[in-house]
Amino acid sequence: MPPRSPLLAFAVAVALGLTALVSARAQTPPADAPQPATLRFLFLDEKPGAYSLKSGDALRKISSAPYAISTPITVQPKGRLDIYQLSSVPDPVTGKNEPVKIASLTPPGRLTSALVVVTPRPPTPESPVPPPPEITYFDTSIDAFPAGGIRVINLGRAPLGTKFDHIEPFLLQPGETRIVTPVPDAKNRIVVKIAVSEGDTWKLLSNKIAFLKPGQRMTGVFVYSPSGLLHTYTSEELAEFGRPNPGHFWLTYTDTPLVTP
Image 1 (spheres, rainbow, N blue to C red):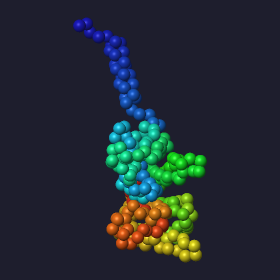
Image 2 (cartoon, rainbow, N blue to C red; image 1 turned 60 degrees about the vertical axis):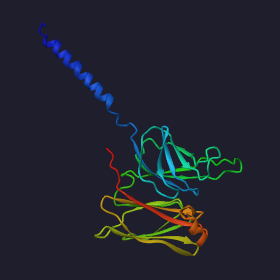
Image 3 (cartoon, rainbow, N blue to C red; image 1 turned 90 degrees about the vertical axis):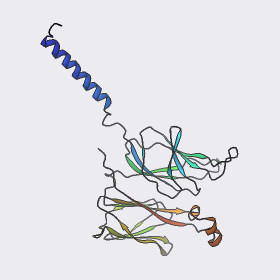
Image 4 (tube, rainbow, N blue to C red; image 1 turned 135 degrees about the vertical axis):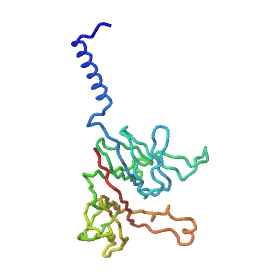
């Protein structure tokens, strides 16, 4: 084989380099490409039944019951997500409790982390079929909700009174939210007091010690259940104590914010 000329060798090297560069760029997603999102779900519904997220032909369970904040769920940026709930009424054909689609949602394109609240809406006089549920996103990215903070969300029907260590007591009206930064003690403890306004008086709902370790944050959601969380009672409890009264409840979870590249 005749020796390769320096010019030809240089041309081959350039061609190979360009091919490798094009291949690398093809495999590397653009910086502005949609990123997977980490979501938690909260369903403010009175119907019992587990919730699932449909991925392809499979259903992935995301929450066991209404008023229970789910564990983190990672979803790919593929557009619409369909949510199903296991019906409490057996299907007349199969005789089984079948999953029924209750909502479709499309998370905002640049949302990387969020608490998603799904609230059913009642039917209108014009239509017996209930409209699609209300979908609310609470951004939980580290920029919107940094570590060390406590986010308080009032989704109830009455004013909410709060008191955290080293934080002045404050009032939140329905629909309001606030992030505060308390100072835990040497054992990472914070006294949390939550009260609901009942006309001229206040009812204390929670007076507990919460733990907030360095790098963590806490979310507290104030909700109202017309059935008093009826689905959480056994038939024996209902027979002995009767049906619970409507009321407000304080739901919390603690997590460590995700740092995205």
